[in-house]
Image (cartoon, rainbow, N blue to C red; front, top):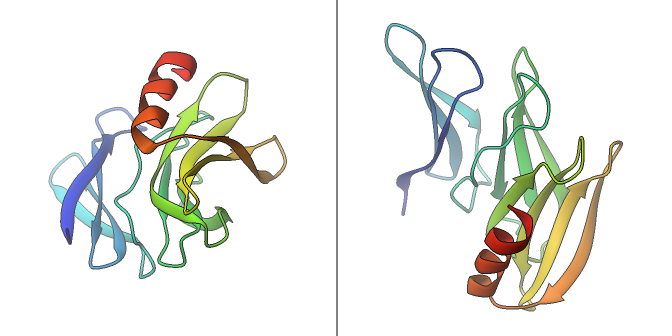
Length: 151
């Protein structure tokens, strides 16, 4: 699908953001108080719909997605502008990552299914991103376990 809304949120009072993929670009459509505005946050390389929005610091919003190189990326608002970084996965990611924040202070995880069917986590340890293989399960099992055990 070339156009579809995946994530909706807002990190400021009166702001609504809708994140979507449009022709391999990451796009944010947001209400600026008077009208809808469309901004391209990252051009090219976007293979999956953006994952749900999470924030682990005040005024911060993160959008996780899979690149065309099958790696995990994060596009985040730094208080002034949008930035993008390749986090992990290193060519092994299948599908859209599931981000999760909150079970430890300052920690954020993006769970994903590898090409081998195993479940992985790319996570922030306070100073850098790391990848860990955490189990062998199906995508439907991943969703139910995240809902039951982590959220």
